[in-house]
Length: 160
Image (cartoon, rainbow, N blue to C red):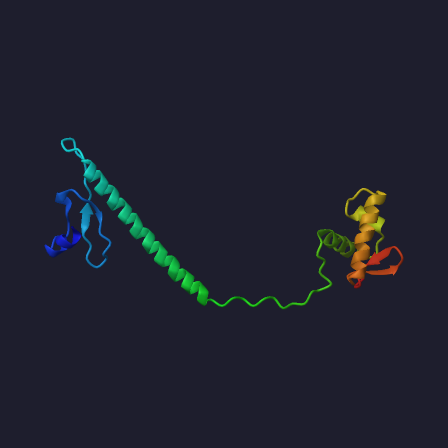
């Protein structure tokens, strides 16, 4: 129907009872769909035609969205990937939250500390199990070269 209307030089088809907009941007034709009135009920064919128009419009919108996604994908594929980080593993950065808390407590104290003192600084109850857990973490940090043990049971940062 749209090609016939274009051939006849018509721009609107309001008087025929259609609703919608043709998607040719250069030469649009307004289509006003079938509508029911008090004196005129829509036939099943008119209802079907309205549904077809709705679905055709939705397909056009999906097609446009698909084209936008295709262009976006093409653009993203041209963007170079970032190079992987080439920084070597640093022994001075602890990988465990408990290690970070211990290092912070040692830095705040500014002096070598024992496991029991660290329990107090970290607000842990001074129990043998807590002291042994802290001592184990301290020994691990010493073995990684992050802390030093100037004398047995006394732990410090290398810069203090």
